Every structure is written in structure tokens, then in C-alpha cells.
Image (cartoon, rainbow, N blue to C red; front, side, top):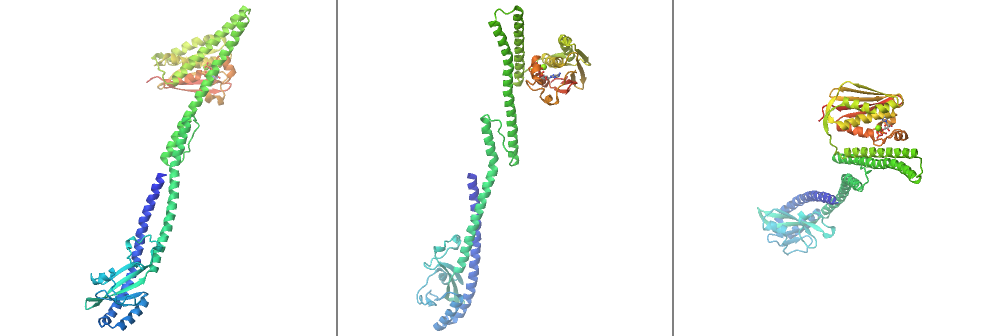
Length: 477
Ligand SMILES: Nc1ncnc2c1ncn2[C@@H]1O[C@H](COP(=O)(O)OP(=O)(O)OP(=O)(O)O)[C@@H](O)[C@H]1O
Ligand SMILES: [Mg+2]
């Protein structure tokens, strides 16, 4: 609003300056024109009257003056060298002194001609410098044009022509009115423009402020329009991308909490049912009791796995996780893991084939790398059907260790592949929970690989099998 007023003030002032100089220029021009005209006529008349004045031929003077007066459209006065009116075409000032400045200028200062605009009623002279914005009812004006009557280069009298200047003043008034109209139009246009400009200028800022307010109240869906000038658009874009990230973060945090609670609730509910059966059936068969206890023990194991997985993830999220580095051989880790999984694989009549082309020694966190390899190979064993085959290959490729865990299991459908590294994501919810999975394994693997500066991707075809490919830089740092 303040900018608007300042803008308007500047426009108004500059317009006033422009209008006043224009009006003065036009006024000057009109006066000049009038003076030149009156002066030429008066000078001719003065010259003609000079002999009659010297001879005091009053009749001839009166006749000439009446004739010229009506010709020039005004009242003509002839004054002697003392400023006394010798002849007045209106007859009222005869014999009187008429001490106006225009007459004095000739008699006292010796000018040939002088000019002024005076009020009809008061005879007050108009200051032509303050001509702008005259009010129409300020009075009527008439022009006083005085010319010296000269004989042998000495002034013997003054000829004064008093004529109305209504037409000239009307032109000035009209100009003034036109200026006023133009001023109002310009001011209205300036007001509109500055309003539109300030709206255009402040709208993005207002939008941004509202967006920030919404966000500070916890509404992360707030987005602002990316319109406006270059800098503002960049700012709006940055804001939108920030709120988008915050929204995703907020959603993932919410779903993480609800998933985690759900995962913890399931084993607790199972345990509760079994424990209640144990309590309310004290005479339960010994074998059945042992079976129940074993199941409860399994659920406790499951719970503790979930909790430790969650802790790992939370630690990695807060980026407080530190790598405890030592010399590790990825090949050795693969052999160890294969050995650990061998009993389960044998149970399912599966074969684990290791092709370790390079030991891939590096300075890294042994237990975390072990977790990566174990999770991938465990998944392969877990999800591949009876009699399946799991191939683990390790090669050195450039500066990276390239580990591939391939199985000929059920594969993963295309639509599920993009989510495979998401937390709590399981393709077949019921079946993988049955096999003890919570859907945290791969997301932990993903984070651990990233922590080592590596990358992981998956290739899979339904019905044919799955390959997880991990690249880890051999030179950590
Ligand atoms: N080799 C594989 N073959 C087919 N499906 C797989 C394979 N590996 C993972 N999946 C699918 O991806 C899902 C996510 O795997 P992830 O390891 O993250 O979780 P999980 O094995 O269910 O549980 P967790 O590893 O936390 O015990 C699995 O539930 C499974 O459906
Ligand atoms: Mg798993």
C-alpha cells in the first residue's frame, strides 16, 4: 500500500511539473502574441497621434482614438508626460492621474512599451508566474498595453489600450481543464498499473508466506504456484521441492511407525493366545505344552529380530551409524554364509553354487557386509522352491567388487520390483510372514551397501528367477 502511494505521489508530482511548465509555455505564447499585436497597433497610433497631442488638437485626437479603440476592441487612454489623462475613449478618467505601473514604466523608466494583465474590478495585476490553476470565478481580466508617444526622441505622452482578454483567458482555462482531465486519467491509469504491478509483485510472496504458514502447522501438502519473475519462480520451486520431500518423509515416517507397530503386534498376539491356553488348561498334554513353549520361543526370536532390524534402520536414518572397518575378504564371507545356510538348503534339496573369481579384499565393516550377503542368500534360499539352485558369483570389475546372487525361484513381478527395497515391503505378505520375514531385510541391505559407497539392483523374471547385483568399491574412503 505504501509503495502504491509513493508511486502515485511521484506520478502526480512529475505530472504537475510537466503540466505547469506546459501551461506557462502556452500562456507565455498567448501573451507574446497579444503583446506583439497590441504593441504594433499602438505604436502606429502613437505615431499618428503625436502631432495632434503636441498641438492639443483634442477633437482630432478624440476622433482618431475612438476609431482606433473600436478597431482594436478596447478602451484607449491618452496621458500626457505627467501621467494625467488627456483623453479617455470612455470619458470617465479625463483630467485625472492614472498611476498604473505600465504607464510609470514608460514615463519614469523610459521604456517604449509595457504590458500587464489586471483584474477588471480591483485593478490588481496578475502574476503571470502563478497562472496555473486559476479559478474561473477569481474575476475578469483585461490587458493593459502602454506605448510611448514620442516626439524628437523624447516621450511626450503615453497611449494606453485597455482591452478584455476573455478569449485568451478562456483558452488558458480550457488548457487547464484539459490538463486536469489528462491528469485524472493518467493518475487512474497509474493507480491501476501500480495496483496490478504490486499485485503481480507481491502475489508470489503472499502465496509463499501462506504455504510456509500451512507447513508450520504440519500440513506438508502445501504447494505454491510457480509463477512470477525468475528469482521468485526459483524460490517457489525450491519451496515446492522441499515440501514434497517433507511430505514424503512424513508419510514414510507414519507408515514406518504403523508398520512397525503392526509387525510387533502380530507375534505378541500369537504369544498371548498360546500363553492363555497354557494358563487356562493346566492339565494340557506334556508334548503339546512343549510344542506351545517352542512356538512362544520362536515368536520371541522373531520379535527380537524385528526389534534389532528396526534399531539398525533407525540408527542408519539418524546417520549416527559408524563403520567399524577391518580387512575383509568378501569371498570368505560368501563361503561362511553358504556354510551357515547349507542345512536349510539341504532340507529343501537346494544347491548353493559358489563361483568366487577373486577374493575381493577390502577395508570395510565386516559384520555389515556379512549382513548384506546373508540377507541376499537367505532370501534366495527362503523364496526358492524345493530342488532349486542358488548361484553366488564374485568378480573384480574395475575398481569394484561385483557380487551376484542368482536363484531360479519364483521371481518377482514387474510391478513389485520398484518397491522391493522399501521398508516392510513383502511381495506375498502371508507367505513371507509364514517364513518369518518382515520385509526389512532388503531395505537394510540397500542402506548398508550405500554406506559402503556401493550400489545394488535387482533383475527378475516371474517364474524364472531373481538376481541381486551388488557393486562395492574395493578402495573405501
Ligand atoms: N530371491 C527372491 N526371490 C523372490 N522373491 C524375493 C526374493 N528376495 C526377496 N523377495 C521378495 O521381496 C520381499 C522383501 O524381501 P526382504 O528381504 O526385504 O523381506 P523378507 O525376506 O520378507 O523379511 P526379512 O528379510 O526382513 O526377514 C520378500 O518378502 C519377498 O517377497
Ligand atoms: Mg529377507
